[in-house]
Length: 419
Image (tube, rainbow, N blue to C red):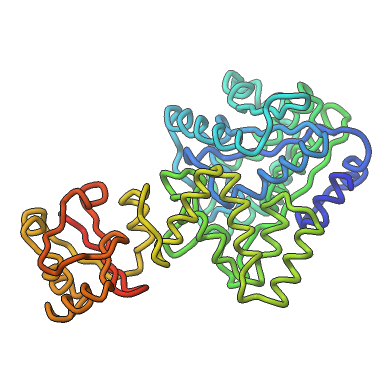
């Protein structure tokens, strides 16, 4: 199976330029995808283009990841209803560091066929406005840019600044520079990048009489119509400080049956045979959610490593009576974000007994109930059975000095927060 066939069966190809199929079916090509450094972390919406580069490299082609140190200072109008805030150079530098670290988990930057990671500020930052307008701008008419969908949509809404109007020229110049310096003849990206990609192809044809190609991927939404990667709690990030491995794992394991096979094709390297078998499981035994667990394991392991995956699975087991060892207060607050909570000041906590806390917090109705439940072994503190209703709680049991998890029976959780 060649690269084109792989991308096609996995559902990556939404639109392609003339000759792209033939180019990917014959000899080695060099291809690139650009990443917008608007944050120090990429999010799950970035995983589809990342995996596009992964497949490019796995099939022996040369993969280039371009981080937009220059274009990020301008802002891409594609897919945006309004102009975004401009970032400072310091913000961009920090964002670039984080993105480089995350891409290194997917791409091999060493060995026989190393991927490249480039910053377009390196070839754009020193260019004068006069030089840019003479060498690049003269190759595009205003009518050409106005015809692009990203620009047309903005004009229909609040309008567009000259800054963002010129963005398409910058990205076209990126493609030309990579074509000249690295023999790059392929650009890939989301379907909202079609206009930018074809502009680069046209520029290469005009000024170098060269042939270049483009492939764009579908923009993902869930079967419920929600934008992919967006939840009620917010964006799902690849950085563990912004989205814990537990919450990341839960995002994938909660995939709808209608979406999970599509996600397995997009975001894992499982073979067609393995995915076909998982698809049969979804159809015949959907209640077992084997496909969802496999998806969550594969993607979490790639992004957060074996340790992160183990931590996520252990955190998920807490809801079924598992231990709390090694979990932080932040992770516990995420795990128990949908259960009742009770706040208590530190001074009062040091005086209160287990039975009094269970009643005061509302977990139990009376001290009598607390005594009966504890004597039968049905009340737990941080996963351990409470021994006596009249016993005070050792402050050493507090997680990060501020959290305590009470549980009655198997699933009656309550989170105690010490102020």
